[in-house]
Image (cartoon, rainbow, N blue to C red; front, side):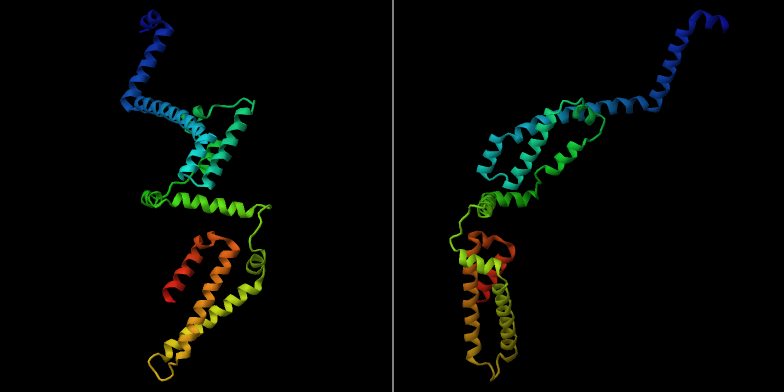
Length: 248
């Protein structure tokens, strides 16, 4: 045995030991796991490089304008992408040494920038709902609503009916008066239900109901004059209009 060790030398013994360890690892499946992890790391790196290239294309101003014109994305989604583009520009201008995000992706590690990217990524809704939106052209309508809201929020915007805007938007008197009318209409409805089919069911009740319908229609007209056509597309306002039209 000593002669064999002397003949092989230390390097030969180390080589045999390494082969024995490799055989053991292979038998236990450790090498397969290491190869699999290496392949997965390479795939993550390649996926990150592809994602970065697509992000640059997605964030280009020409692409954003095209998507907005087609109604594919909303103004809010475009604003998120522009914010993400500014973040990437600042990263490129930073001269400090840093590890590539592709390398970090290979190590299955997310940078702070990637976490922010996910937060700024446009959210995809349920596919059926998205299909209905595109079929009915609701994306373009949503963009027009946002554009109109932005236009009305500008300091230089001149309202066509400033007096009505002050009365409806800035004063509590209009809201209190509207609340009082709604309460009276509810009381009238309760009375009509209780006296229906009896001698107390007087024609005046029907007349009062028509009066409230006219008043509520006037209220809608005033609110549209104050907020513009976009008033109809707020959820609560749409329901109010439907109730007045159906029950009236």
